[in-house]
Image 1 (spheres, helix red, strand yellow):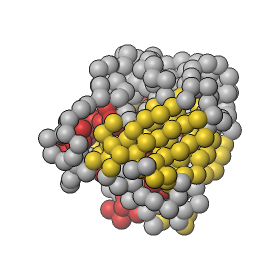
Image 2 (image 1 turned 30 degrees about the vertical axis):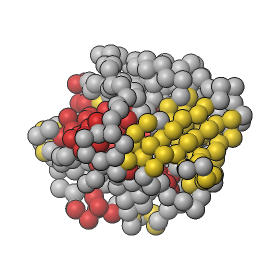
Image 3 (image 1 turned 45 degrees about the vertical axis):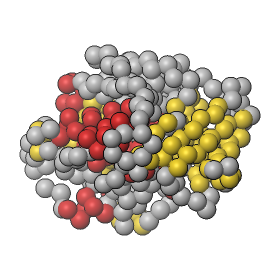
Length: 353
C-alpha cells in the first residue's frame, strides 16, 4: 500500500512523443524515437524521479510506435448552451455530476506478489468519465476504453509503482517487469504518486512540460481512442498512442470556446494559469502565431511558446498569463500570423463546489 503522504506530495508525470517519420498526429505506424528531453524545474527532485512538495518533473521520451488495434472511438459529445452562471447551466451540471465522486475505487493487485490486479468499484469508469468530461468541454467526441489495453496499462502501473520511477522503456531488470506492461509504458501517459482518476486532472494541467504540454494534447487529440486506463494507489498509465479517432477539428483550444468552468482552471494543486492556455492543430501551422487575449476590452499580456510537434497534434502553442489570473467573465482570443486566423470567446463561469 502506498503511503498517503507520498500520494499527496510526491508526484511525477511522464509523456511520450510519436516517431518523427510517418503521418498523422498520433504517430500510429511510425518508427524510431524522437529523443529524450528533461522538463520541469519546479520543486526539489527526490528519489525515483518523484518531486517533493507537490510539484512535478517529467522526462519525455519518444518510443518506437507501432500499429495498434481495438474498438473504434465513439462520437457525439457536442457543445452545451445555457445560462451564463452557476447552477442550471448544462456545462456546470455536467462538470459537477462527473466530478461528484472522484474516488479511485479498489485495486485488487499486490506489489508484493507482482499482481497487476484490476480497478474495481467504479475506479476505471470514473477515470474515463473525467477524460470524456474534458473532451466534452472542448467539443470533442467521447472515447471508449479497450479491455486489452486496460489489462496492459494495469501491468504498466504496477511496474511504475513497484520501482518508484517512470520510464517509457522499462528494462527487464525492473521488479514486476512484464512484456505487457512495457508495451503499455511505451504508448501511455504515465504518472507516479496518483491513481488513475486523479492522474487525468494532472495530465490536463501538465506541470513541468513547458515545451510540450504533451499530456493535455494527447487527451485533446483528434485521433484519441480507444484508450487504456490502468492504475494502482500510487501510479497510473493511460494508453493514448495509436488511436483511431477522427474528430476532425481544425484546432482545439484549452480553455475552449464557450462555457468553461472556473474550477477547471486549477483542478488540483496547480493550474493552467501557471502552465499555460493552449491551442493545438493538425492542420494550421502555428509557428508564426501572434496572440492577443482581452477581457472587457482590456488587453491581457501572455507569453507565447511554440510547442514541440508530435504530442497528440502536429502544431501547438502555449499562452501563459503574465500578471493576471483567470476569473469569471468573457475572454476574447485572437491568433494572427497564421494561414487561417483563429478567434473565439471563452466564457469562464463559476460552477461552485
